[in-house]
Image 1 (cartoon, rainbow, N blue to C red):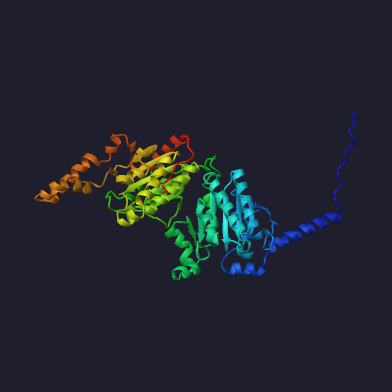
Image 2 (spheres, rainbow, N blue to C red):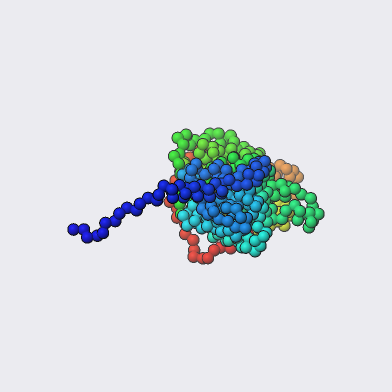
Length: 521
């Protein structure tokens, strides 16, 4: 016999109570969602969407789960000027916050910052990317040091999460003062032309201090950061295309550093690409577009170029080869003959380090005449910045495949992921020239006295150049000494890289025990 007392199901609340609860909930939700109509209209007139409209574009329909919706601070408004929570992009979990410029200009106070802290903490705890939609007038002045403390909490969390989860910052309006450090700490930063500006001190301060007159866009617009400062990874004309590219970028990234990048079914097209031989001229002085070569090597010719407008003499891109995500670094002969300079070294180094942090194999396409000479470069730290790229490659433990397309001279050859600094597989086209410098320059140095004394120095130079090329700069010289694994037909480049990556897929890197290295910053 069961002696336990009977448990009767709880009676549902009376209908009147249920109606009251629903009415109260709907009232609160309506109060939060309505916002200031005048401010919303002003936002639209400026060509900008509201925070919630942006989240609708970014996230899968119906996936957003909001946190701290009813938070109120010194603004007196619910949400305290930032909409925060989680949703999905193509079914994958992300965490996001969107600053609401219609509430006190999206200014950041203590409560506003605490919501961001909460979202960032949950992103790290669940191993999910975090996306920031920035549109803020800056620190909430009336909250003083508490607003500054809130920014500090964001920055500290960004540094702690670096290399653990992808961090994406999207600047869709003003981002001034200390707030600008948040996009700078992110892995990738998007900006929209005309509506987005980012700077530490605004035009009024610049005028007061230096007398220089400058507009908001001239000082910190999207094109400034996309082509001059290098802060913006991607620049777009409108919010729709910008947020669509954020979704595209996420499709190429793992959710965290413990997961592999998302793979897909490889295309069924032929790996043989005869067009490659005609894309790259044999003459080392003739330019061509490395992006055309990348298009022939990667799946479906599809890749996402990072920092397209900045340091264009090197190209960095995310793509797929055989359905697997790869990072591609290539010299661009179309711009400055593809030389490495301070900006290109910084750009490539940061990209290499990101790929290594998130288990993305690296493919390096080499056609480099050297480092850019000149006092401007030397005074600007060419050695220090070049060492950043050298450090990044030496440190990288992901699979690394190098393809030498044409010339690879001097220290720039070493820095562009040569075998000597840890490349796993080095491939070269029959047109490759690996040497300390070009044949003619080498002859001018080695045989300076002979040329000066010759009756016909031009004829002697031609003979000596031919001899130098035959003995030291021919395509098989490096292969004979184990510095190139194979000299391949250009048409077979995609197939060879694909096989190499498959061979290296299970590579496991080991680092010596240490707190961290000292990057030459």
